[in-house]
Image 1 (cartoon, rainbow, N blue to C red):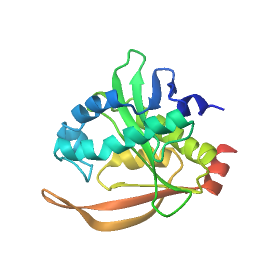
Image 2 (cartoon, one colour):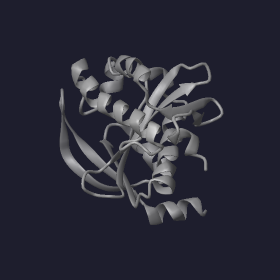
Image 3 (spheres, one colour):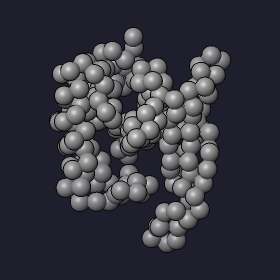
Length: 196
């Protein structure tokens, strides 16, 4: 199976140029640097924020991932780090289990500015979608983004996600408001996509 090495903590190819591996402690420094860039955090509702908040969010994920690898199971929230063949940090992506709703996941990604425009977001979204439906027994994967974040919703659409809703003026911006877009993909929709 394609994802078994990933589950064991090994890196696997994302594309011919990039690899992914489950998050480890050493990755946190690269994540923190990425989240210092205002261009990266422009469409992240939780940023900018103090470093202590980021550490408080990511450390339990890192800790659970290490335990999961040691126990031979998937982490509660599989989070992958993307690197090029030279080891340069190119971003991250993750699947978050929706609390109290077994089989429901949310997919997301963040890339540093130097990784934009290379197809990485689409590649990691497709890979995490496949992981959710083919290895984690998902029946629904959802995502949301700012309406102004064209790159994000275009990525979701390239991966087969359909817009399922819109919350008007959801996000408060420096100069006004932005809508929140909701996207989703069901297991049945995924099966139709991969059978084409």
